[in-house]
Image (cartoon, rainbow, N blue to C red):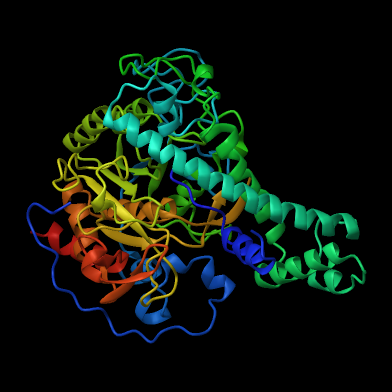
Length: 535
């Protein structure tokens, strides 16, 4: 899974350490010339009630670069009837019992629950709400780790994987120093105060001659003042994120696949997994549950947030572990969703190496033949993915220049502030291999066990886009996947003429961002769909 660090911790850790002196080219059309709208830039902080749904707001009305979803419902859809659209969620699993999702979960009408028989004869027994291709597996290596665990065959792929692995491992060591420093600093304060959660007032009340404790007090005061009480959960999440690298993702001794029981190098070995679509530990289905919520949380029910699309059913296909997904699982997951009626499939995952990428390419083509739109996040490396043929899988180009399919949409991520910084610094970009942008930072949606949370990444931008795609396919079902893709690109709101890209925030022309130079707008997309449907 192409993940990014929890919200505040990386910057905070850097600040604390510094303070202490511690050490595709579109085959048919060129990018159109567009003019960014004149917007009065929002100065005041976004109110909490708006932040929780900022991706649904309207740029002109609210000065927030949302997708105008609320406007679309209020002005375009209130008197229209849509049809049910099945959306496949290929991810880490979905909590289908969540209070805000259970009413929108897909049910396989051809399968009799819990009878232990493959009633629909699709190869998957009792697949009532989807399928779990990972079985009881949760953690996994990165693909580069799996490659270098094999014998050095002298290939360019092995050499590149080894190079990237070494760089990643060295970076992980630096991250470990950071997180250990923060954890130990926090722990010293917790021990002194004898409480796990404390306030700035608690820190101010500490009077001591202990120089180390005073230094730790100063650091945690700075961190807590900037980030609030949520920082204690963030510290735990950051530690888990960092140690996952050493325990699983970069650990050459770890064998996560053994528990599944299949041969991941044999695409014909397909009878594996089970029907528990949230996996062996529901809490670990956080990512997929959040993605599902962005698309399909029940609107206007006073629970959590609102989904983008009504009239949708969520099909959960668990294929993404804590680590890099296997090409075989992704290929079979896409085919499963297609064969069971999905018209939109969201894939909020990605990796840098794909040894069996042809299996995924074939699955993408299969989805195209069945008129299914695939929506993928562009990745969270903050890079121009046009420059590296191994930059981000899955994708719809074999050479990073020419598309082999017209049913794949690659999505970059936006922040909630319109202007030069509207593209999230972690978001990948590229005028050939990213299609359009959607809200991705601070997105509020469902997580397991009837909870809700803010998460960020192109993982969140992708389902925002997929939700709008599902809206179009619901209200204008005669439009093809190819047409829906083009509508989402052509109808979007123009990005500013100059934007800051990547972690370095280098100023670049909007033409460098993506094929369209735009951000998705549900209102304008539905207007365009209306016009196209009448032709």
